[in-house]
Amino acid sequence: MTPHGFSRVAAAGLIAAGLTVMAAQPAVAAPAHPSLGTQITALRAQGRDWHQALAGRLAALPSVSVTRGVPAKLSGELLAGTLQLPATIELSGDTTIVARRVAFTDSALRIVSHGHALRLYPVESASSGRAGIQSLITLTANGDGTAQPGQAGFQGQWGFRGSSGSSGQDAYDQWMCDGTDGSNGQPGGDGTPGGDGTAGNTGSSGGGLSYEIPAGSQDSWRFESMGAVGAPGGSGGNGGAGGDGGQGGRGGNAYMFGTCYWGFYGWGGDGGDGGRGGNGASGGAGGTGGNGGNGGDVNVTYHPGFNPDNIQIVTDGGPGGSGGTGGAGGGPGYGGWGGYGGASYEVPGAYGQNGSAGGGGSYGSPGSTGYPGTAGSQSKTELPD
Image 1 (cartoon, rainbow, N blue to C red):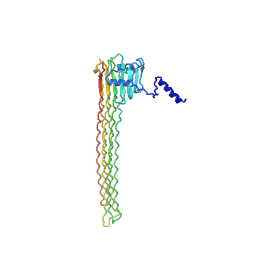
Image 2 (cartoon, helix red, strand yellow):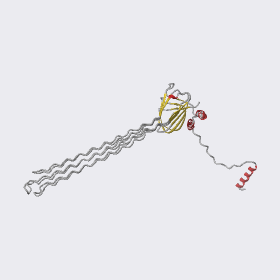
Image 3 (cartoon, rainbow, N blue to C red):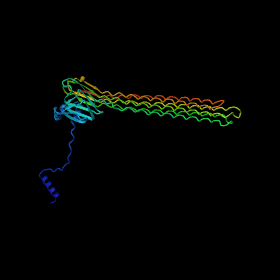
Image 4 (cartoon, rainbow, N blue to C red):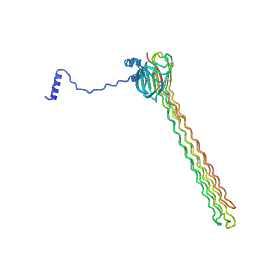
């Protein structure tokens, strides 16, 4: 009998005996159980007593006698018996801490949040570094104030110098014995405007804070999650100065080897006028200040009997950064010198007129102040009996 035939016979025998044959089913993974911190957060949002609802899971936490510290950077979920917190912790992601007992260092905890949220749930107690003394315990998760300021605008280019006028032609015989006039110098070029400063970056936001004050606490609590000030805008670049005007050309000399054919000496040519100086350019506008960072959301729960007046919460948005200063206008170019008159025994040429100076550039407008950040939400909620 073939193996398949034997299988059919065996199956028929089992059915005849009143047993059911089930085909094998592939294994299915059980759904992942929510983490303890996730369950606590969800129950708090519903206003329920998570101590009672999660008593079985909380009992599995390490005992209070087991003390642990924290890593250099925190992220995810951390469970502990007694957690010894340093004066400063840094978050690299949203973080949830569940510990039977939380011990603060010297009544303060500074949280370098980078905008991440910290949820801190002491199960049994929380204490400051001053044992037996009623304290004000402060948790701060303010924006860190590292926003980059705007960059300064570029410097405007100076105007080019005007070219000098050409010299007049000297007389070369008694028939053409007057020197010719020198030509005028060319005006100087105008400077180019300075570049505008760039806007400052937005201040960093405060990190979110969720905290439960343990039952029986006699301390006062202050929670801060303020946005950082916006960075200042960059200053405008200075305008380029105007170029100087070119010098007037020299007048040509008269014939200097005797009188002209009509019996008199020749005249020298007049010098050319100096060129006008170029105008200075305006300075660039200052950059707008960065907006202030937003305050973080803070929610605190406490047990019946605790005075909520002993809870202070500050979640202000950060002020806007100052605008950058406008760039200075470029200075005017100087007028060119007038050319010398040509020489003569009788009537030398006149000096050319000096060129006038150009106009100075105007200051750039200052940048406007950034907008303040939005305040974070605040809540103080009493737990049910």
